[in-house]
Image (tube, rainbow, N blue to C red):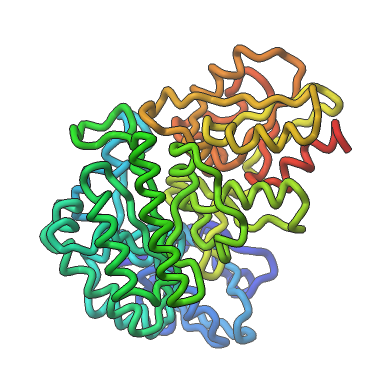
Length: 455
């Protein structure tokens, strides 16, 4: 039986005043067994609650009267109370299969759960989606959802997902769009598998059939040194250029039809192709920022003071795994209380980032004309391959980079490297050989951190 376990009760809340306590198990709310934090939030918005709990093996009924919409005042152990719907695809390009052994167990969980797509922005292939799921999504307005498309040709999609339900499951994408659910799509492009003419066909089908998609991000294949799939390899420069040419061609066609840019290529493609990143106006609302689309321009705008607050909050790969249950429907992935901040003002500054991040930051830092600020690109030896984003940096590689740096300097580290205060390899900032200041992963925070030296 699915239960939500209480891990915190807020003082002076309705739950506190009713006597609920940590480790209570919620068996039902207003007669309904809870499956996830989505139903929990909907039901606890009600003014009258009949709560059945289990405490020390004894079942207790509690009645609570409160204002409509007033928070109940509980924090529960997970976003999903029943079993997470795991993925039954076997994609060659899946990054879960490319993880080394010995990492914490939660990182190896491969989900295909539309609820986690709604709550955390995970991508679902819809191969395990059902009619009852569609009914719930529409009835409760669980929008937006993120859907992995990869290819619209049924046989190609079957092959890529290694699942015969791959092609047929796109019928759910039609149904969701028909019911007005906002969908962000993703195409992971694998060299010689779904690029070239297959990518042309996929974008043509989107033009003909899926123009109501909110956005579609075209992202490059990430390959770690731990991959055992012989067909999986990084894109060459010429292949990246070809992908961009196809994307830009269909951007023009679709824009003429809809007046908006639906399809976007990830910044990484432009970096590999050594092509200029598109201007800010090309990205609409930066909807797919967390999937690597528009990060460079977003950071640049923030750093230059063109916006007053961060456009997006970077969460980092796997951040959902250890994320706290959502406040409402969306989760705050990197709580600030878990970050370490040790300032040493007026000292030389080293900015730690991934190899791609270094390419983005270098021209921005050069505009300051500051000789005492330097970029420290951290090579990702832990994952290897073409993995070069800051969000997949681990403590071991950062420690090795810092060991070569002088004592007494200020070292800035983006919080996108951390989930619940830890790196993916389990190390913490306190384990590093130099003190670091962990700052939010946005241009405003970086400019503010640099301000101690260059105010």
